[in-house]
Image (cartoon, rainbow, N blue to C red; front, side):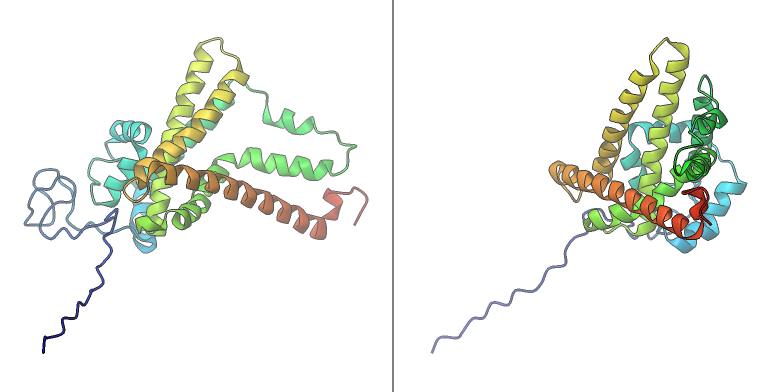
Length: 281
């Protein structure tokens, strides 16, 4: 009687395509050198480098970004402009020494960009007052536009957590957590702001039509985000997969913005109908 041979196929653990934070043991995550104390003797990075999380971001990175200004701003500016996706992944994997805090950089770039936009542009108050006071909902339109103009920097930065939730869902195969997706989107937005600042300076220096520059910046901005996502997620997705997911993200985020604006209008029409229909209380 021949023995029965049974093949047992054990499930193989699916490899992490991105490996966001490998165990480092006694090796510096920034330069790869062996370490024996609290700091690397080669690059100076602390060995207490952890995977990004909401708790670590709030208690350490956020406080550090507000109260400290580090060296490395020009190095970080070059990174976010040329390789935002790769730079974000390197930071996530532990290479953090010599980099300027991304939150501080975003605040500086957003403030600089919106300040440059005021040069040679019509006064914001004049834009608001152009709205026809006799039209229906004029007061609401004025207050809404005034709010947007006075808080545009914070609104721009507020889009990061929304976009990060979208990339967390669309690119879940990367196994990055939500905070790490926030970092990826922050690096890409910082690079885009660097580009926008450069084009604004060119526009101020050369006689170029504003409409031409705006159309050029819109197209480059769309492609720049695709470029950054490809760098950040290429280990888990093909270029075609990144492109169609990015297109889907673009449509979903646009739909989300429309829904939010609609809900705001509904809430205002219920609690402040006088802003939309004058004479109604």
